[in-house]
Image (cartoon, rainbow over all chains, first blue to last red; front, side, top):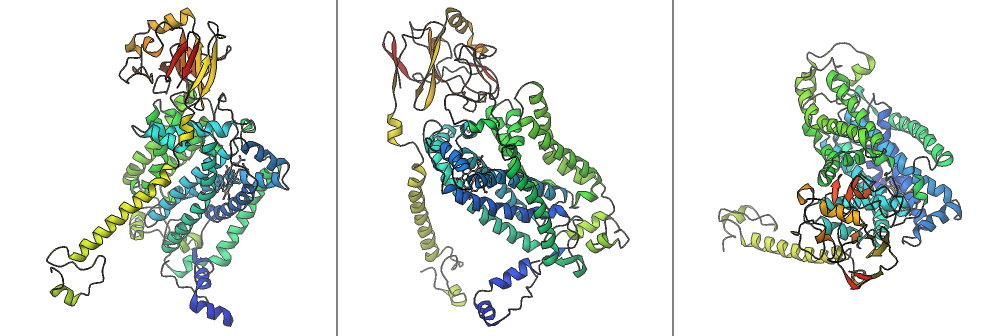
Length: 423
Length: 207
Ligand code: HEM
Ligand code: FES
């Protein structure tokens, strides 16, 4: 799509004058108005836009919360309570932000699942995918540090457990941990620096999002068939087609978001976080926010400290190399009869790990967490490379247009078709 | 001069990265490399304060010692005090607990180091090495699980004390014995014995 030229025509003297100096409107028009989008995109393609809106919602609500929040061990918890009770509309802004984090993660997980199912990580979209993994990591760091700010029991002990992960690193681990804390234990010093970083990181995310979209607009969007746009009839202009679909999905998503904000703002959180942090008493059962549970389950599944830490970080790091682990040159799982089932089993595994991560680490919960952790890694390290080599792909349409209009005929050998796809 | 010959007649020299010819690296290459090298040394030095500011400052390090009166703690009782922001478990162990701790052979332990801040890492994890001579009933430990930093249960009277009768960390299920040594679960090390000394018969100074 890099060869797509904007067909912007400046209207009026000022627009023309501007276009000769800073062709911003030309660029925006080319990238977001007449940009060719595959005509067969389904609703799984609407989460990118939703994620952008969520980032803006978090930055806007976070900015106003920070006008009332006090980042010290003595005042943080009370200032959050004051936001909820005293600040004008503070209850609303706080709910928008706290629920917003959950909705943000919900959207990102669906967005990533879409990428896995339709093979959006494969050539030529590797960089696009890796930038996505970086955004995901930054989001996790941001969400983790934001949760710490409340300075409730779960905040405090969550920070304790997660920062202690670094002490598993041989030799320098303990020094790194003390450096992160700025003290000999998690304290107000730690809270203060987390506030700084929690304020900064969303803007770093915004920067990486720009690169992500740039990379997207160089290679163009993937689509449910995994076949690239070949002719004009395969695509439609972004406005109004893709934009309207995005807008509708966003409205539905916002209804869900608003429902939580107004009717169940605490449903996704943990009641122990309404108890102020107490460094002398650990809650009986520490759990992170729901969106971290699958990774927490992996951490606890390994009965060795360093091993658990490596497995947990590894479970995310491995995502960066899947463009090279997957040996199939068919993108969409729709045409991969074997891989498809392994992939659904993988999705089930992640949900199951999420369930297990919220249970106490004992007995059969640990056993099952081990089984699912094993599958998690086997999926990437064994299934992706092997299935790609042995599977016979099913019949594929000739083009996106054929897939939509049912214009018959299969390609002589779907694999050959996809090979031609590869750039 | 190595440069300034034929090669630069046809290819004008634009500075960084240019001016290689058959005579090997030119004077300009040298200057460029030296300048970049020097700039990165300066960059690294300038970074140092930005990194170091995050470490605990002198005032935090200074809050180093705490005195504790042991007189009110009867046999079988335990108290928790704060030292450098960390909980310290002090337990007046019963005879049975001391015996149980002494009876364990070192080869049964997963961490065989005493983890006593006043001893080298090579000291064996015997109960003697983790307590003070003639005050063996007193067990003084940093009450932080060596796994991921939760506070183990075992100080309270009604607390669960795990399979080995000492401490139990509910976070991920680590069991410690009556000497605070790790016996089962994911924690890699024995509970740390902080530096402390008896300043009188019934008083200790931690740190
Ligand atoms: C990537 C975007 C962001 C995410 C995922 C995020 C996530 C979170 C989370 C999970 C909490 C804890 C909510 C709770 O349980 O109460 C939080 C709190 C907070 N965040 Fe953010 N945040 C983001 C952006 C921002 C920005 C840009 C700012 C400031 C400009 C900010 C300022 C705050 C403040 C002041 C709090 C503490 C008050 C409270 O708990 O409601 N956040 N954030
Ligand atoms: S922190 Fe104690 S077992 Fe994990």
